[in-house]
Amino acid sequence: MAILTLRNVSKVFGEPDNGAALVPAVDNVSLDVEAGEFFSIIGPSGCGKSTLLRVIGGLLPATSGELYVGAEKVAGPHPWLGFVFQEESTFPWRTTLGNVEFGLEMRGVAPDERRRKAKEMIGLVGLSGFEDRYPSELSGGMKQRVAIARALVLEPKILLMDEPFGALDEQTRIILGEELMRIRDQLKQTIILVTHNINESVQLSDRVMIMTARPGRVKEIVAIDLPQPRDSSIIASDRFGKLVAQVWNALREESIRSFRQTEQRN
Amino acid sequence: MTESTRLTAWRLGIIFGALLVVEASVRSGWISTFFLAAPTRAVVVLWEQLLHGKALHLTLITLYEIAACLVIATIFGVLAGFFLWRYKLIGTSYEMPLAALFSSPIILAYPIFLVTFGRTSAAVIALSSIFGLIPIIMNTKGAFQNVNPILLQVGASMNLSRKQLFRHILVPAVAPTIFSGFRLALTYILKSVLGLEYVAQVGGVGMWLADASYKFEVEEVYAGLFGTIALSIMFLYLINRSESWFRK
Ligand SMILES: Nc1ncnc2c1ncn2[C@@H]1O[C@H](COP(=O)(O)OP(=O)(O)OP(=O)(O)O)[C@@H](O)[C@H]1O
Ligand SMILES: [Mg+2]
Image 1 (cartoon, rainbow over the protein chains, first blue to last red):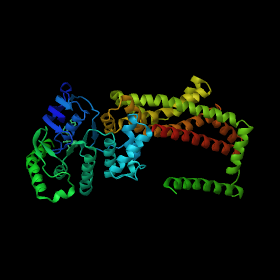
Image 2 (tube, rainbow over the protein chains, first blue to last red):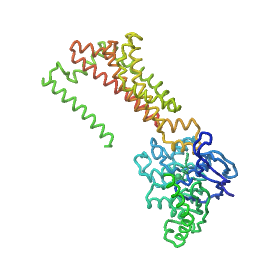
Image 3 (cartoon, rainbow over the protein chains, first blue to last red):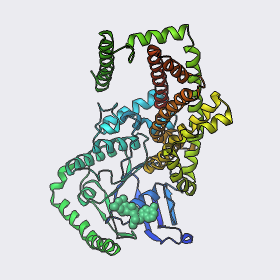
């Protein structure tokens, strides 16, 4: 059974009664994500990817449509969900350990236990030895890993990630992607990843959903039939190249359209 | 040695080095004791005055006035700043006049306060609180305005209650800016309290300084200055200690 279901979800920004122009950001999106699936959403810049993910995460109310987590219809943050933001989101007043412990602390987990769990998760994202550093003493990639660990330690059944590697260089991005797959296999999670990187989406996913230019609709969903488990060496295979081409084919037209849209607005 | 202990060492080194130079210059007669007291003498005089003279009483008055100003400025300043942030329209309309007020010489209004409250501590507290109030209002408003909304979304994504969001995300996020407002406020309050005590002879360390300087009691003047510095260090220490409590 699908662990996450969207039925005709739309989001329009702007309130009709105060005269602001209405911005349709997400239009009529329906999809089912299976438990344990790695599902990527890719689309041109500004097409509504973050908006869609925020709606799924319950951080933004949908204008219309329905959202189910498991069999439960939801409107608001569901405890099964964890969120990693596109923007820098670590708490600057907390150390790595303090950041990762945060959610457990708020849930009233005893200090010993939450420390143990947080340390384990910090190890899993490769930050052992940096427990007592503040975010200002960490690199961008390390901060993003802190944010990932902070979400993962709460053991969300579904992890929503909004371009978590967006600000990183290509090498770090590939290595972190690999780590993410390893963690996913260990924790048996469902992951929904928003990205604008085609290679990344193909490297990591079971399925890739391509969105149209704004307002974002489902253009096509490509099944990635590369063998599992995989590591980053898959990038060299023929099949990988073919799938990347297939995603780009679907995306190309939309990217051009999105580019024109922004040109017109300027 | 860590970076911060090295810094502290340097800082103390510079301060004590400077004191040593002053001490040597006075003792060798290079600078006349008519202008400058040897720091060790000033400290001894301060100590004697605290034990036997009028200084203890006067210091307590100043201590009380500063503390009262800080409490009043903190309560009203944080509330007003929060209010100006919550109600955007009011906040926007009052930002300019407040800034203007901040840069105007309110201190010249002291006769009005003396007439209203008499030559009492109340007059000193009433006027000096205003000096503390303004930076706290401005910093509080700015602090809330500049909270990174993503941090609140992190909290929302974890299903935090409103109370948890407030205490564990909003408060630590605004604390540094508000506390630098407190430190600014302390500086202004100190200046105003001592200045008023000095000018209006209302009592406190300021009056002691005035008395001593009229009588050319150089050592007492410097003893009073050291006392003032000690007070300000004490208040800064308290402010910094409570800041770290809010930052978690
Ligand atoms: N709070 C908001 N109010 C009004 N419009 C918004 C708001 N948030 C986003 N938008 C608009 O909705 C559209 C989609 O934005 P969104 O952030 O979802 O895009 P995105 O696909 O995540 O882009 P990127 O790849 O750059 O991250 C954009 O045109 C944006 O200007
Ligand atoms: Mg986005």
